[in-house]
Length: 120
Length: 305
Image 1: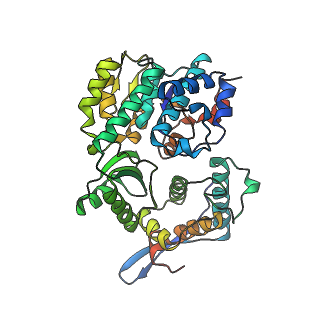
Image 2: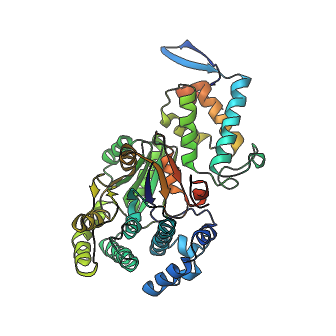
Image 3: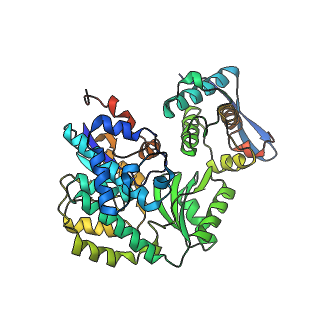
């Protein structure tokens, strides 16, 4: 069952933005999905994956996997994400490890397309 | 349940244990490699997935990919696993034609070599290449091409947000840079200098067609084959020749090809080649199906006991 997430609208200037509160349950759920995904796709025992695992050099992952994960989470949390905003965010905040990927995914869930405007 | 055999083009990422996997299925791999060596004058018996001489050399990588595809499909046929329908991804077309008995193994090698020579001739004074753009739609990439007057073709629509591009090297580099600035998740140049599926190779059509007519005994294919270019089903020798010549310079739409296969009731796809590039692309197609790369054939329902 998808975790129940709280979404609310707030006004910031003239723009209405959709925000999601990321609680501990969502954090755990995202981590579990990311770990399961890479264990399955890279055929690696889940026990061998850590937050410090490098997605490409340690696990043999690729950018298509990143895209696939984004699609999994946008469906799961019913988000409408413009991929270009994530691409632009990725240039400033490149992802190399599983831990960084989990963090970025949580930011996407929390901020949606507004991710491009956050600092860290 | 309908089964499709799908054939990858040259492979850039191997599992690493392809030889062991193939040897479990068939004792004939050395014969195929010896034949490829004999036909080309090159040494394919030294092939190893970790040897850059095979991965980074464009012609060798095509020939080894073709050889593995042929060996694997023969091994599956020996075990009575036959396709209901087939599709070849780019240069994977040659192994599909071999599997469908439209050409012989030797003819496939000669076709690959001739296509490569004609492509080199067509681009001899040009620096060219191919690249990958992940995260933009075809319209978003085309907009960049149009706005910056780049002589780049979108070579292959792999999925809604994954494309290959092809053309002159400087324009290619510029497009990759602009795509990243626009918000692509990932851009990269491929280990390919020949601009396959671009208009730069349009001039190969006549010469390649003539070569095929004069040197290759193309026969009707024994299993339905779907075009990766326009998704039509074709069987006849004439249609095969047309597909072979078009395959060098026309855009492929693998996403549409895959969707047509699903619409025809295919639920099981066997990736007849090394690596799992087609499995990776298939993640983005919705539907109730499974793709089995070489390393997952053991879990194929009801086979290889």
